Image 1: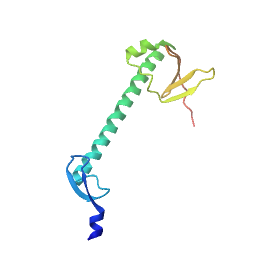
Image 2 (image 1 turned 30 degrees about the vertical axis):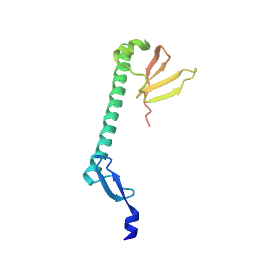
Image 3 (image 1 turned 90 degrees about the vertical axis):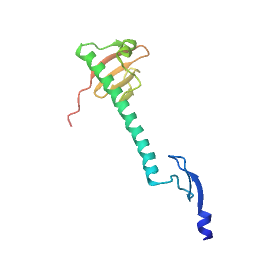
Image 4 (image 1 turned 60 degrees about the horizontal axis):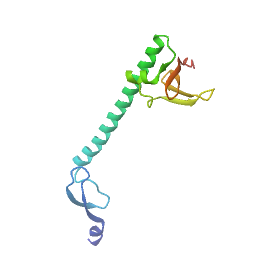
Length: 127
């Protein structure tokens, strides 16, 4: 009986805040609170993932429109007005001439502080 008293402790539920008694490492008052807590975390992750995918898709559409218009460069401010967000890329490397080379899926481009240039579609690797 003394063992059980040593290992039990009071705590507050992370989901609803209810005071409960249980194991030292117990964080929730019930299984439903535990599930609700973890479901909320997963929902936030799915929401954030959707926002990122939407931003990448928007960037891709803007870059693809440049290619359709046969334009290989544009001011970054003009692209930002269209919804382009340079923070969302799928790849980055240093280019041959020291430029920062960015990718949005299969479209690659160089970017400076004020301009996007050398927009091109990378040929797919036929492996």
